[in-house]
Length: 199
Image 1 (cartoon, rainbow, N blue to C red):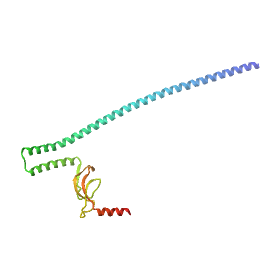
Image 2 (cartoon, helix red, strand yellow):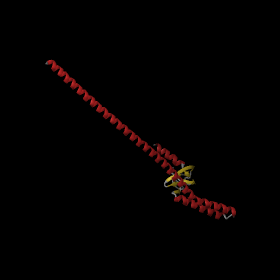
Image 3 (spheres, rainbow, N blue to C red):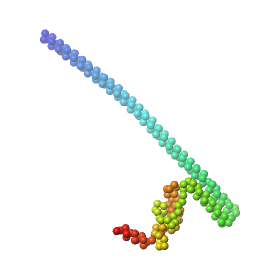
Image 4 (cartoon, rainbow, N blue to C red):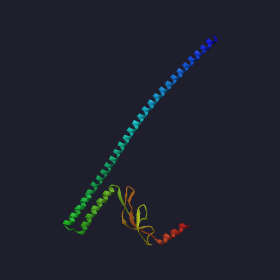
């Protein structure tokens, strides 16, 4: 009987071991299938995100090209607008030249015609936000002026602009061309200022 018990115990042990092995195999197979499915889902997600990335990249490239084209069109439109505004002034110069060739006029009439054209040009510049600024008699400012000559006149305060050689212009408060000027520099005052700064 003890042999039978032993055999039965071995059989039970084998069955239990076999069942356990089968359960482990089944659990491993399920886990492998889960991992395969998860891997498949991840690959699909990666492909989906990659496709979305490529579409976004293509959209961005198209947007960049469209922006560049629109920028060029705006630039061309701006130039065309500017040229159309300048053409009447060119027409007036042509009329003045033609009038001077066909019938020599009084110098005062010629000067009057040139002043009219000049005023027309200044009016156009002002309408576009470009304005000249006065410099003579004002204190030198390196943001507004470029000193191309220095003179000394003790009857005028130091650092005052004496003469303007080329007028300065602003475009909507931005300096587009500084005025070229002559500045009064009194050497004694400059030397005195230098010694004061050493202390």
